[in-house]
Image (cartoon, rainbow, N blue to C red; front, side, top):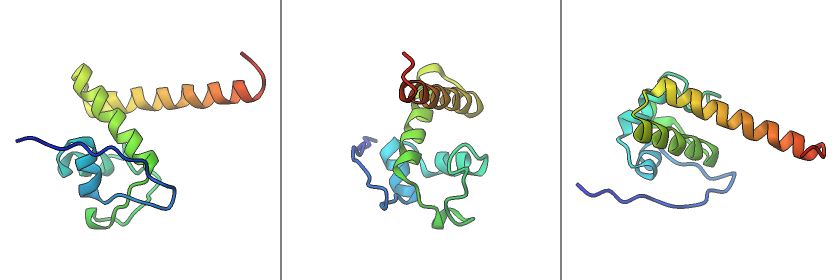
Length: 104
């Protein structure tokens, strides 16, 4: 079955539904639900308790795509992929702080 991958830029006020996020990441909705329930996605409690009410931001989309990429490329489980993505995000934040402070 061929899947269409959605490429888009979300604005801050826009949000994706569970199905839209799953489609944008080329995964089943169950993949998203499992990662939300373990706190890997939407850990800030950005939606309702049930999967029907969750709304995902552009930051959630970027994180979900990174998780998918790590899981697929390295055959990593969801915990390992989350750790890699968390560390990558922290490195990016620290580099931004260093750059803002004028440190190269």
